[in-house]
Amino acid sequence: MPDKFAVAQALREIGALLELEGENPFKIRAYDTGARALEGLSEDLARVIAEGRLTELPGIGEALAKKIADLHATGSTDLLARLRARHPPGVLELLRVPDLGPKKIAALHAALGVASVAELEAACREGRVRGVKGFGEKTEQRILEGIARLHAREADRRVLLAEALTAAEPLLAHLRAVPGAEAVELAGSARRGRELVGDVDLVAASRTPAALAAALTGHPLVAAVLGSGDTKTSVRLGSGLQVDLRVVPPEDFPTLLHHLTGSKAHHVRLRGIARDRGFTLSEWGLFRLPPRERGAAAPAAEAAPDPAAKVPIASEAALYAALGLAYVPPELREDQGEIEAALDGTLPADLVEARDVRGMVHCHTTWSDGRASVEEMARAAEALGMAYLTVTDHSGSAGYAGGLDRDRIRRQWDEIDGVQERVSIRLLKGTEADILEDGALDWPDDVLERLDVVVASVHSRMRMDEDQMTRRLARAMALPVFKIWGHGLGRLLGEREPYACRVEEVLDALAGAPGAVEVNGDPRRLDLEPRWIRAARARGIPLVLSVDAHSVAALGYLRFAVTTARRGWARRGEVLNALPADAFARAVRPVR
Ligand code: DGT
Ligand code: CA
Ligand code: CA
Ligand code: ZN
Image (cartoon, rainbow, N blue to C red; front, side, top):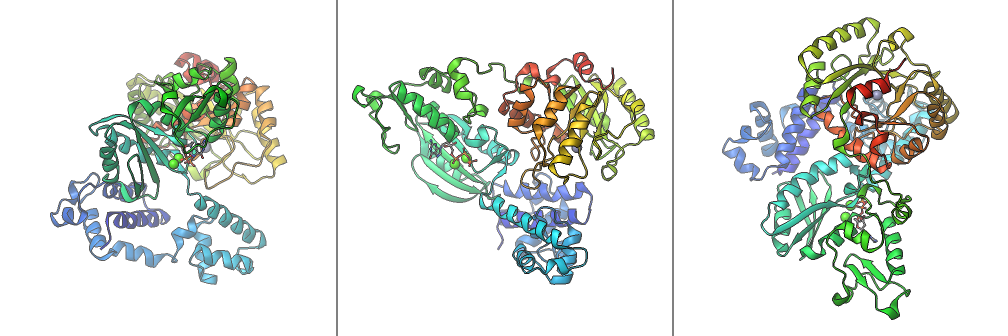
């Protein structure tokens, strides 16, 4: 009989197939919500079904309960069977190939009977795809490249930071509530805010580690226990994500948290510094070296050094201080110059924090492709304590996204004026303008003049060659209008590579004209990426931390923008939306 994870997977399949058919997003989300409710179920699913209590779960109504019962009893349900019959077999697997859409998949299935990625790969290699109507040699090559990327992605199964945190947070809360748990923290790449995460690392302080191990292995999200010992437990969640937990006595917690936060490259440098100063640093903590061993090779990492030589360390900050370094926040621990800066006292102490941000920038509404109205977005941002919100719906060229023309944007302004009378948050009238192929923006000057804020982004013709894309972006950035360069290189993590482009040339153009760079907080984008944020800052280009929100929930993306900006060493004073409303509005006014 399928377990709760198998039933949840079937619900997700239904949702994905409905999405493919263009079904309404609310309906699709109901299946995801149901799947999540099942994955988090702490009771036996068979019992909940038998007692008719499925509808007591969050988001599960009568109709969904019936389908869950069918899936549990038989492995299928009418709707799933109908959906599967309407689509070529393997369509969902094939959709994971970058740039392969439902139409192409249907054509390939009809012509070649292709029903899986492996079959498609073979067909491409044998040169059969180029013979299908509408496909050519170039497309065939592109599909092969997409398959290679898909394989690479699956080989190291990395997940978006947001997914890792969504999984980690209930586990952290659960573990923190275990009696005897004195501290439980996230470590690893997720704590460093990396955009993609291999697994989740948790560290706990307790004198009764078995209770924590049991709490983790018994958590409803856990699908399999990979290993469980005295101090180390590894599990796999229903989603496939691995979670490692290490438990140590409270006195060892700070150094283990530090060790497991990484990165490896950062640690290699720290160990060298420790040795130079007569210490050895390892996962066991910081130890004084006996005089004769100073300068000698490090002892084997597996061996715990002499406990008598251990230096008590009360916090991560104390560890850095013991080594003569300023405290390095986790987001900076990548050996990208932070060690040198921490040694010579030039590490910025005023990195931007979530609480510094006062305005939600880059928000879409139902006027284009957002799901919430202007008023809903305004009230939600207000409830989050924001002082202002920029309404930046798409412009006319973005026809696919319901972009506004001159007539509709005027009507939108009327609506914004109306909402402004009912809310206390300040609303700014903006646009997410398209950067056209020649680098122009797709609004005439008389509209730009009336706007409060312009985000300028590329949404079409993304595959230009490097010269063309560089020229296009540099032209746009050099325009005399104040523009915020939106989701700079257009990457979609795991799906679409950044544009081919000489980024420094574009930043040079922006540095010589009015404008700012967006740090896009959508967890699939996180664009520009940290190294380019640093390159922008080095040129004195200000930053905007944006949410690129298409729903109320997406206002929560702000935290990812903040983390990404910190990874780019962004300081509070460099962030325009850390300014109060009036100052922000003055700073970003497109035409002055
Ligand atoms: P991930 O999981 O691939 O996204 O990246 P991390 O950084 O979370 O790496 P993970 O989970 O393998 O290990 C967590 C931390 O433990 C890592 O950031 C540093 C530390 N660590 C793991 N293996 C080693 C190692 O061989 N040497 C050193 N110095 N540290 C290690
Ligand atoms: Ca990890
Ligand atoms: Ca790990
Ligand atoms: Zn956009």
